[in-house]
Image (cartoon, rainbow, N blue to C red):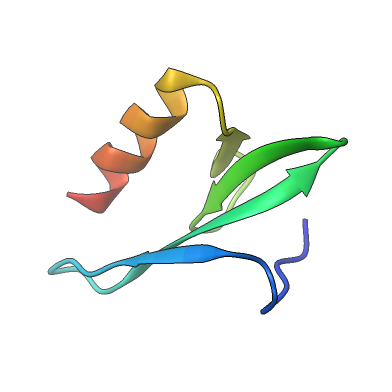
Length: 58
């Protein structure tokens, strides 16, 4: 998934450095993407995704 500079995003500042969480369309549905890797994205309406982002942002 290529992140465009035109997609909406949120920057979370943390001790380990900023974390960029981007809202993007994936397979026709909204998703959040953060970090790098295959496990760093998930459906925007999935409550588990919010918990995963919170764990990374700590």
